Length: 107
Image (tube, rainbow, N blue to C red):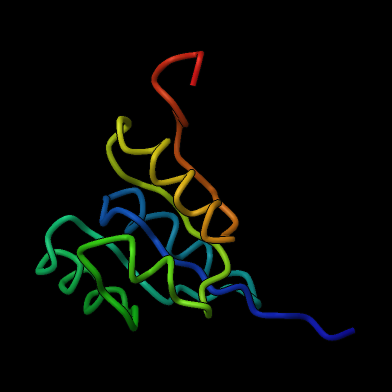
């Protein structure tokens, strides 16, 4: 069987992402973290350097354009989850989002 490595992008340089998710993804033999996004590039770059993540961005747009990224983990403020998840889905990425996905039941 030919198994494919799943390449992840992390949206949000949060404590949960740093302490739990990046290492959890890496524990799987086919998991790799390729990119981190933060609203501040310097924060993304620091997170990238600390965690050994190749790419750092201050916008989700270039990360979602990266054909090597298969899935994203969303670890931002609650009011950003829905728009970021929809953008990732529209870009053809698989999405794992912290709760809540949306702030209103109608969303």
